[in-house]
Length: 508
Image 1 (spheres, helix red, strand yellow):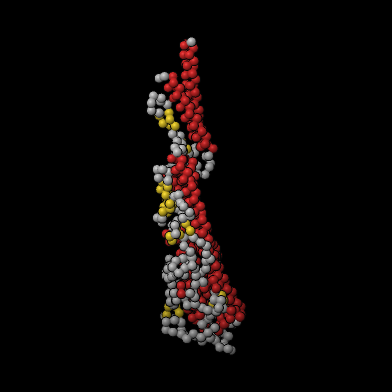
Image 2 (image 1 turned 90 degrees about the vertical axis):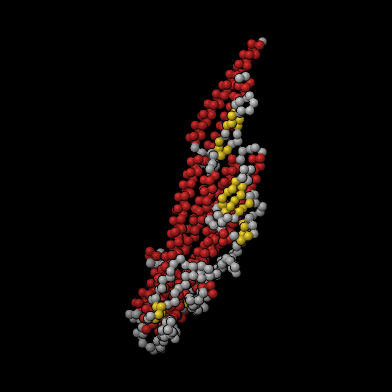
């Protein structure tokens, strides 16, 4: 081997050691930087010509794209479950502390108890006052739950608008980074740091709407959502679009509805959105919360109607109307009844109506039997109405041998497309308790989903870290090895220089 060849080989070794030291130092400096992955500098034996030595490759990442894609999806699942849990906590709080006997079913039960106690002395103003108080507590709970549902639907709608904006911002970031990656890759430059940044942007996007990245050899990329929609990268303009809206009990998305869709490249994809915060907000707004509203409205309307049927107009809406709970829910009067339900002002003004009754019931073979109110100057111990209320308004039958019409579990929601996930109990107390248990149970299920998503995400994060995160101890050990290699190559160069000097001296 000639001295020139030895010098060239030593120089290439020095260059590799110097660049590798720089990469190791960069790894150590960014060990705590979010999204940063361990970088390596590959060495390639120089087999071209007679020079030998080592050629430098491009700095690259040590990553498993399959793990990264799974980590992004799990991040979206965690973000979505967390958003759902947070919003459902509001509904749970509105239902009250069931453990303390404060739920809807508990308050209906307390009202029944007040009527039973009043039977002992129907003319007692004290017992009548207890019934009015219990009735007011029932309407307060219905109004609180109904108000929380509408407010939470509005939060979901506002969340959809925010997540669409966030998704578009992430896509713009991914597009810009992809352009840079393709440009630098075409110029023969390393794109490792840019790829880290792009993966971070995809992770952020996946929290809004989970996507799978389809990478191409030239550094390009396409994104596919869980619903199968393709997002072109780089994207020209914002691919997603929606608009704000004020949500009320009768608002719904779909044909004839007033809630705007979420579009992708101008095509309505609202019903196809899955996962992430955006998917959960859509589900809450369009399915979960409208069903909750219908169940609470039916509970309130059925209670009012069953009192009405026995001759006591105890609950009405603001205009004094009692809706028919057997009519289709989306026909109009039932929607929002729970929020407007009040104790009949006439009964509040004249509590003796709780004993005497408010109106005549003509009676029928398929409904409540006939009833005539206690007349003026009638007996103070009139108990006919109280017996009807305790036995039938709170019971499963409208009269002996005749059951009440079943409470609807299908055709719910302002568009009539939703269904309850349970079989409706036959009593108003049982139905109200079931509504509370089901709706608050959804929050518990959401909490479990958050915990499960955290476990999956943490497991994938560990797998990712084992391969791709920076191990400072290992990097420091590598730096010592590189320093020794640098010193050895420098020694070779100094030896070659000494030999050249000796040759030149001999030639003189």
